[in-house]
Image (cartoon, rainbow, N blue to C red; front, side, top):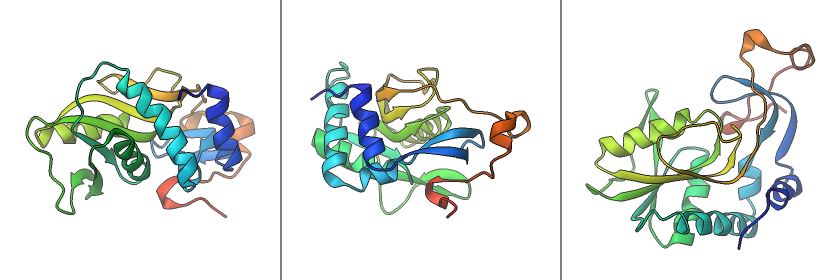
Length: 197
């Protein structure tokens, strides 16, 4: 089942997950909009609908057999699990240890395993590339990547084909180049470190 960009964004709006304000992203960049994927994924039926559509895109991508879904924690864990369920393969995740992504919890990647790397949102592609590098160091081969939202407008290069349910170009700014209207709003740092109340 394919979804249009409008349908995908309607799912985010219905979940209260498309936020407006001043946000500091995990990349350190500032943005007037934030997509809080955890709110979208907290509804199992909504997560299944979105990931079913994304899994269809991956299946149609010509990547061949996928052995394993791998995600970076924290944002990629739920979407990675649901994508793995849709594709009928296991899911594992990397987590940050001393500032570097690493496998823990007894997770391993079989040498030569064909991997789909899954994130919730791709902005610059930095954490995706870091995860893909970790997969390679563990002996896996990343055949493609997937995310719910590509907020780079298709500009992020993760080094492998990237499937996104929708692509948006949401402006981002460095701290020293904020537009006046954004600088006038106190920033929130959402994501796994929590959103200011």
